[in-house]
Length: 303
Image (cartoon, rainbow, N blue to C red):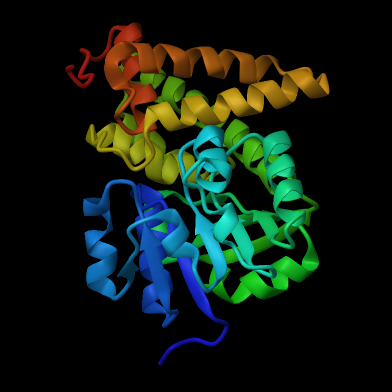
């Protein structure tokens, strides 16, 4: 049975977007999708979504429009570019941007849309590809209460945790904080696994012990297991965490925050991308640490 609340559109069907859009369909929402590479939409269409041939066609009669795009410039182009959707959005529409982009730019986009009576939420997500597929993401929301009230039933189809952080841009600030935390965590865990190997101790047993104590984390549960399995198929690509940390680094600098840990982690991620792993899962940072520690040969993706 179709859900109440009007038609929803989802734009951007990459690793994260496809899972989110599919969950909207599965929860009974009347869903239209659009992706620049139409072939990537096929699984979502097979689940029951309609495929639009352009951005403006995609947003016709939509009450809520989701975006899940790689970078700030992609969001701006989708909204305000020559073939962008802004001119096709009806007054009262809510745009929900689940992309991870610059907080200041996000606020500017919201202001431009408000001039035509369109509301916007910045609503970046955490939980990775598995969370997107399972509908168990955490959503960090910035924007007005009124817009969230309209969008909440749709967000509930993709996320089990929805936190209203504050006004426009606040969700993007929270996502930057999230990426700083998990990146520092993964860097530390990668060094811990390399230390165990260097000392002749089974890293899988070390991980098992750490999971029972204060070091327990999602990073240790998921990403370190991928490292131990040498499974670097992209759930979250190195290139994307590098982009996210660049956003966080700019925010830290602009706000005047003392951030030595983040500066060090950013250099590690830059080295990871330069090592040929930019399209691998970012858990491959552990492989780089092991390689540089002399306990593992490089298994970076070959060009």
